[in-house]
Length: 409
Image 1 (cartoon, rainbow, N blue to C red):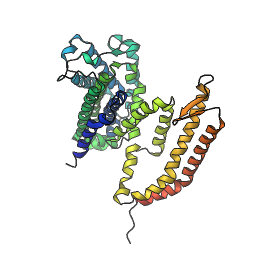
Image 2: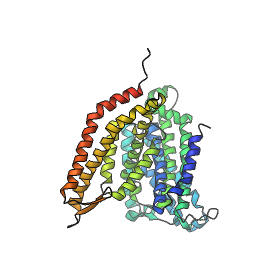
Image 3: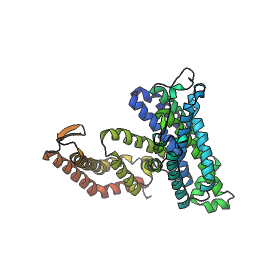
Image 4: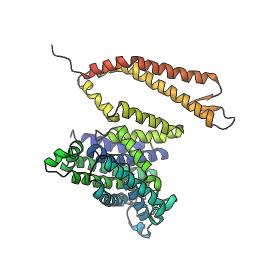
């Protein structure tokens, strides 16, 4: 029961989320978040579990998406149930991964990364050449409501689409977790850490990498099928190197050292991409800063930060960190917001329409030609960052004290 409890809680959360976030745009964001979760976990089967850094893994998601849209456009689609489309996308992604993995998984490291980069660039170029399948620059579009109703559900409303994607996400996450507990999944970790020792134990490192690569391609195809159902269109941007780089960022942001790390990364990234993207044109700049900061100072990702608090919680010292967080982390966050305000005002002055002096920032309407907003933003940035830097040694000492067992008398 203790092992099943997280899954039960997750299923309940997915079930009741539309009650609190039932708007059309909110349902679309949650559906996009679910697709990103499947894609990120499938990518982490390579990077986190198998140690294979891929710069072209969006190809398998894109191929699944294109195939599902072609099925949507078939005249026989009216007799095909829509909920099975992700399975077709998964099988197509699996077949394509088997072909590519047959030669790309001969070795890991730089060789594998460069092959994956070449495959990604090749497929992005083929989108513009093989227009029969990829549709050229415009891509392929379809309509999900032309499929066969599933127990009377036609999947026209966003709520019906959300529940379909959520169910598939739950199934895919559970299957990927079970795969990580299989002998092949466990040996992928051994091959990642020490392929020579795995060979001495009688396991073929290449075969383990190939199996992990193929299974990852299957779930990428499933994510592609879900993307086709949600957006009803697929273009070159769904399988190019940029899309592969984004999912790499998502996995690192959440943390590749834990199974549930990419789930956190997918949730945070989707919120930043959608919610923050609606508030500012510079959301990619802030996301890049966050990513660089995570890689430099928190390489274990958000999940690593969370798990770092476990020893302090077990020793009952978690409360001792409240003060240091208030005196160091909180001023640092406020200082970062002040710095972001300065960047936003500079961007508004340089790119705003002629005569447009007013802007809204943090729900405050003000003129960028007034001196006071600049002084306030500058003061918040300098004071906040200054306090964070000054109190950083105290925070470090408090953290070490909370995470260290007391010495025996």
